[in-house]
Amino acid sequence: MNTNSASANQYAQAIMQAMLERWQGALSSVSNALKQNPQLAELLTNADGDMNERLAALESIIPADAPAELRNTLQVMVQDGSIKLVEQVGGALAQVSSGRTAGPIKAEVTSAVTLSDEEQEKLRRALAARYGENLTFTFHVDPALLGGLRVRVGDSLVDTSVATRLQSMRESLASVVR
Image (cartoon, rainbow, N blue to C red; front, side):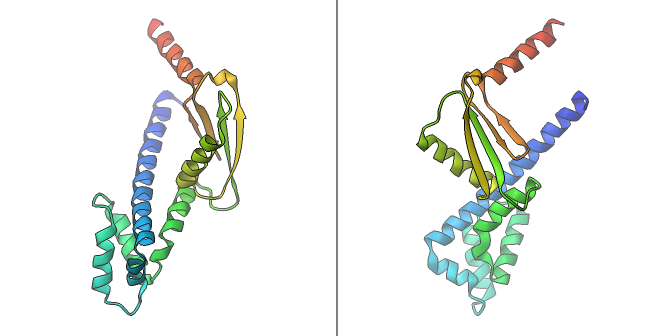
């Protein structure tokens, strides 16, 4: 793959990730509102209720910056009486967007030092929110990373290690010198 294709792919992945995060953030906001207000959840799922009232109630909990497509999807979910599935939709969205919809997904976390139980749990929650609940975790220690983390979920890799950043800087400097 040439440099232009690689760069284009990186931009495309960044755009998709930003869109996914925006959708998941809005879905999470709606899900939290429903959990905090059971009467609202009941109103939105009541098939006998006035549809205009139900849609107005939904609109009151959708974040102002939510994409129009998400608003439409949530409205359909209210009309179908399936708004209570909003949390599961967020997890499924992460799986569908990554091309993985069945079976457990392997999440491998490598750190320069041993992570505490609290740090591991925070990572578990963050990765489950991003990729869905169907993750199996393994934690490794590799002192060669020098610091930071390398997280692989399925075929997705996020590498924030100091060693990788140093390698990138070395390559940048070498390309300038040539």
